[in-house]
Image (cartoon, rainbow, N blue to C red; front, side, top):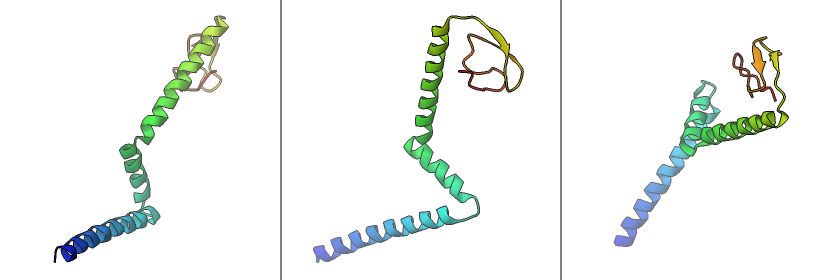
Amino acid sequence: MMNAIATIIVLVIAGTLVAVMVYILKLSADDSGKASELRQFVEALFGGSARQEAAAEEDSAAARQRLAAHKESFSEPCPACGETVTHQDADCPGCGLRLV
């Protein structure tokens, strides 16, 4: 009797998991814009955006080190927006363009 109850419980749990997976697949294939919301949810859940932010911070730190290695001071207009940038800027303060 206990084996039958345990089997039923396992089958109900497995069926629920399959139903949830099918529902998520239907959401991701839908054209109503819910796919992007689902993707953002998954990235937030598994830390996908945190990894991208960490990589961006590492790139910015590397750019600052390359700028410090040049040791030449300059002041020029940004090629994208025209705002004045100096040797201390890794990114343009006006438009965010990567300068190095």
